[in-house]
Length: 550
Image (cartoon, rainbow, N blue to C red; front, side, top):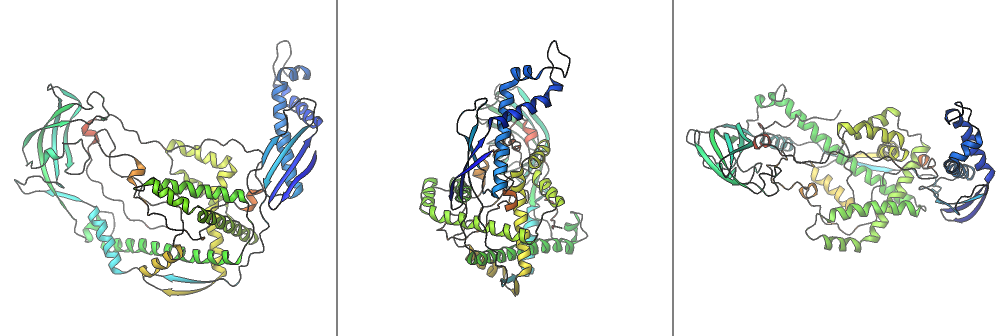
């Protein structure tokens, strides 16, 4: 194979590879020899089909496979001989259509990773701002938790149900002509008035109801109701009130704690204290990490591959565009983003540079992720998929080096940061939560910090416990249910590094980008035609016991 360098400018490289026809033909012959024992053809015993007949029947397919193999081997040889470390997937293109018996020219273009200067990690100084959980904060969190455990007790006799009360009913649903419809009958169904879990008019029709009362509710099913035969149609429900209950906040005492399997109130307080400590430790680490990255960014400057910066910028921009859809005026939000485009590009460049720097520090100091840690990462990430898709995800990560690198990168980055914390001279200072949050905000002023919704994300992305059935008239659009983010400020050129692959991974990039297996998708929320009784809320569930991380 002949190699000619056609471009060497900054981090950009380009080459022309000439692959001799004889090399391709040799691979065709090798493939014929490999496949011959398995090929069957009328008139020949298995394994005795002449090579020329195999070529005649399967020649084009064999040549395509041989050409692809020759190109991939040629690019890998080029990378190895020149000591090239691709920043992104090399671009590979044939100069002309392949013709049997003729040499083939291949154009290869790529950007290489820069030679990162020896990282300066001596003399790092950091301040650790620590916060002790206050008794008031623990009490407030315990109080919020208790209030979320809504309980209902029997109301006094003759009490008329009001919004917030729970009414237990038997019911029979009928069409306008008085015929009971399938799925419209139920017993002992608990309805919380004002919860909006049933069709419009049902809950409001129970207001004022008393124990033992019988009522007929006149309602109209929504036009988009799941059961088409009832959609948009009027109906009646014959109601018998079995109980009227009023909400009550539980008493926060030992008995309350024991309902969660705990020994008493002190153990419950201890769990919340641990949760708050964990949150505060996370804030402390965030502050230290960003101060560390600021020091690294200030003391290291080198060229970074434009393709990596563009890829990082594209990721940032997609996130911003998504957030803009939640704004009251999306067009105005996008226009404001456009005004800050250059600042976001600087953030992308800083992220890539810091990512490469952390990777270099990790390699020089033998920071590694063990197979066991990688397996735990994959298992955790797989939990976000439906049970039937989890194995597909694990197979995908195992088979796709890029997917594995993306999954591994955040942990690798954290391990490098922990290594640098050990190297730094750290002083301690106890502050209040408000002071710590203000210190982080000062660093973050205008900084873009995209949130990755991974398996460790504890954000509430749904309405757990709410039945999204045909009787629900809530807006099920997930994006609309999320709180709108604050409008982006003018951005300073500082940000955390993106999760980039270690430089060692980059050198293993395949010459021709393989087609990735489709990522398994989580099951979409599907509304089904369910009876009214099935869609009604069950007895209120208690929130899970507060847990601390091991």
